[in-house]
Each structure stands twice: as structure tokens, then as C-alpha cells.
Length: 449
Image (cartoon, rainbow, N blue to C red; front, side):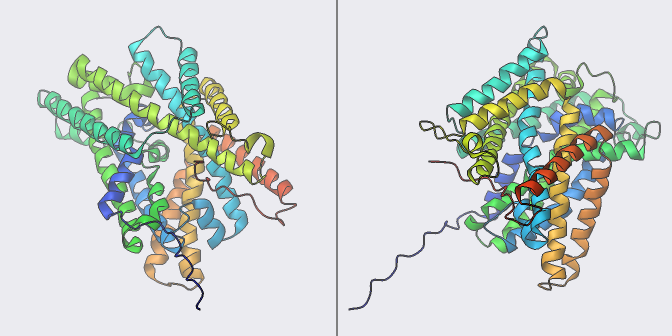
């Protein structure tokens, strides 16, 4: 009698189309992404927000192509840590992963800052520290209770924010129709000879790249996509392009409406005040509420993501397992990590400005982007898999642009980021006995059922 056939291996079903991926990417990034950055980038770039957003778009498009290439090589990964570690060297993968930890922890911090500032637009007398405490505690409590946002909820929020963008653009167009604008006025958001500074605009571009952060999440769906070799790259590039066009329209209209890069009642929530000028009190309230709801959702999700990353490191004993590897027996969430991330978000919100938080987050993001661009060159060109023009020049250009923008970050962010990296290298050297043992894993583990 023949032996029973072994059961077929269960695999993820390939059901996602190209447009499913694009919609997913837009929801992750959010169509209102440039609104939160508008004020700080405008002040930094002296009004050249449009130029900053477009420079960032070029760098991110080249990097998006590289993420698509690496998703083809490692379809089950989707992590810059894995791409760099597997294609170049495990030690460089470790450095990339360590920078990811900083990004994960900083994301809920800047969401805490923005939520507190948006709330102060409704309650002007509210102490900022009290608002920061409330939202850091809110994110913590939501995640301690095991509250999860569904994909359907995220889609509804994404569609709602798209409607808000349309409302703003319509209001801005109506306002501008009543304002006499010369050709010089229309060109000023791109180039103003009175205030232009290449150094300041590039620093603004380095900050504006946060508009696109999140596109790399598309590569994590490689195993569920129809024709992943084609669609992952196309979706990543098209998502960046669509977000770039939307962002350009929004900041261009906002700059024309406000007419200057100074005089915002609050730099961190400047876009809301622009909306108020264009559409009155009603649009001010609607846009402020929409951004607040979106940022609460982003902050809660980022908070749990940071806690899960720390849990993954604790579970593998890269961090003290008793604390970081703990899972609450009832809620099945890494509760100690959730509380720790909440404490860091609150204390950090009191010590770090919104602009500084953005730059520090981008410090880690640029390291990951540079690493992925180089990983394409190493994997395909240097290792002889595909020695073609497209596997050498675009990723090298992406690396150069990201490196140049990385160098344009303000000195305080570079110092703090450098200290974080140095601490990581020292920790890694101790943990692996001079990088001779197994390196730390920075992959985010799946959620506990």
C-alpha cells in the first residue's frame, strides 16, 4: 500500500491586484501627509515647500524602484534590515535595523506632539504638557486593551481624508479666484529669488521626505500579490508618484493662499490656519478634526508597531527577555513595551520639537533608504544576477540623492542620530562578541492571536 500523500503546504493566496496595492499604499501614507509638515518645512525652506516636496519625490521614486527590486529577490521579507543584511553584509543589516528601532519609537512621539497641538486649536488655554500626557496615555491605553484597527477602518479613514483634500483644494481655488496674482506670484512657491537658499531648501527637502515614508510597506505583501515581480515595483512607484502629485497641489495652493512663509499662529499646525483663511471657520474645524483623527490612528498604530518590534528583540533575547519579551496573558499584547513606548512618547514630546522629531525620524529612514539602494547594486549587479544599466544607475542615483539629503539634516538631528547609531554599534559588538556571533534580528513578529 502506498504511503499517504503529504498534506500540501498552506500558502498565502495571491489575490491582490496592482490597484489594491496602490490603494493600500495611499492609505498607509495618507493623502493628507504634507499637511502636518507644511509649516515646519515652509519656515525651514523659506517658503519653498513645493520645491522641497518635488526634490523629495525624485529621491523617493528612485528608492521605491529599489524596494520593488528587493521585494522580487526576497518576497517574504519586506524589511530594509533583511535586504541589506542578505545582499551586502549582516553587520550593515544590523546598522540598518538599529536605525529602524529609532524610527519606530519616534513615530508615536511626533504623533503625540501633533495631536496635542491640534487639540490646542480647539482649547487655546490647554497646557501643551497636559495635551501631550493625554495623547501618550491614550495611545498606551488603546494598545494595552488590545484594540486593533481593521483594514476596513483604515480604508474609510483614507477615503475620508481624500475628501478633505478635495474640500481644501476647492476652497483654496475659490479664494484665489478673488485674489489678483501675477506670474511672479504663481512662480514664487517654486522659486523666490528674495529668499532662496540651496542649503535651506535641501534641508527642507530632507524634512519633506516624511511625506512619502510608508511606501515600503507595500513590499511586505509580496506573497499575496498577483504577478509580484511586476506589481510590487509598479505599485510602490505609482503610490509615491500619486502622493507626490497630491502633496504638490496641496502645498502649492496653501502657499498661494497664505502668501508668505512667516506669521503662522502655530508653525506645527500651520496648514489648518491656511485652511481657515481659505474656507473660514467651518473648514478650519473640519480640517483640524480630520487631521486629529488621522494622527490618533497613526499614533496608536505606530505605538503598537514599536512595542512589537521591541518584543521581537526581547523574544530573541537581543534585549532582556523578562521585560521586552513579556506578553500579557489576557490581552496578548507586549504590555511592558507598550507602557515604555508611551513613557518615551510623553517625555520626548516635552523635550523635542515637532521639527526636530521629523528630522530624527528621517535620519533613520534615510539610512534604510541608502541601504536598500546599495542592496540592489550588490544583489543584482555586483553578484552578477542582472548586470544591466537599470540595476546600477537608478539605485546609485537613489543612494546619492538620499545621502545628500541625509547630509542636509540639521546638526542637532545628526548628533542625536549619530549617538543612537554609536550606541547601537557598541551594543551589537558586546551582544555578538565583536560581531562574531549571531546578529540581532529587527524583523517585526506577527501579532499574537
